[in-house]
Length: 239
Image (cartoon, rainbow, N blue to C red):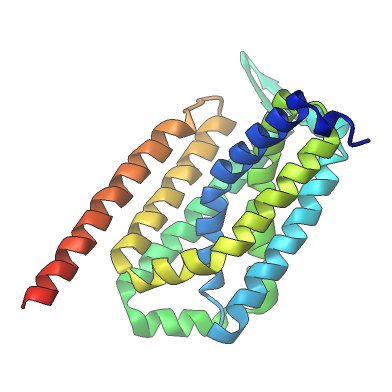
């Protein structure tokens, strides 16, 4: 069962897929960090852990349902030359959900801390977990279909997905604290999720935009903000 994994091709496939899953999981980590912040402080880490654990189970179930998953790309409805599949419906619905949640989060941030605390009290533990799972399923469908194109061995896929989830769990708390401690970074993260939502909707409507462009633009924006943070820290130290 693990013979192929011990070969050079198997290790290269595992490393490539793991790297891809981690990169594609960046948006997932940011969303989980932001949505878990809606919970009371004492429940945030537990919410992230349970949400990611259930999301991992969903991903593994999807991996073992690859034959069913590949049928999601088959047309459900054709209007003239435009055909829509179950995958397209999932991406569009998930993109709209992400746009709604992100826009709502931006609105709450603009309204101020008092309003934010009122909204935080209204979020139940189960609703936050549900939202984490929903958005993870949306991201999972696309990443797993991509994984199927890269690797044929299901064992390698399961190992890579599990390791990527472990990476998310390990860094989600740090990412969450860092984002919440820096308001400008939080707004950049929300802008990133807003663009991811647009990309998902566009992809569902067959307007494919490479995510690499978005990742590069956001990485450049974060770099500029880090330089600004250092400059502000240095200025404060000299005053």
